[in-house]
Image (cartoon, rainbow, N blue to C red):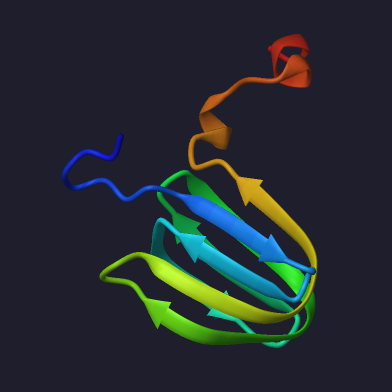
Amino acid sequence: METMGTKKAEIVLSDRKILELSGIEDVISFDDLSIYLITTVGNLLIEGSELHITTLDVALGKMTVEGMIRSMIYNDKDNKKKSGFFSNILK
């Protein structure tokens, strides 16, 4: 259940051509090859070709992208706080 003040994050991809997203907080950058977003569940990089943002409503946290979607990658906000295998060895 969604609580007041939080936006539910959802991704719906249809035929790799239409991408509907919710939980959008901000668009960092975009061009016809990539779109970089801040969402309620982490930063999201969308890569493809001929990408177009057809609808964007940051107040509602919703966005629609059209084009050929090749990949979607989340980069967690707190990724730097976690220590990995190599950081433990190098201490």
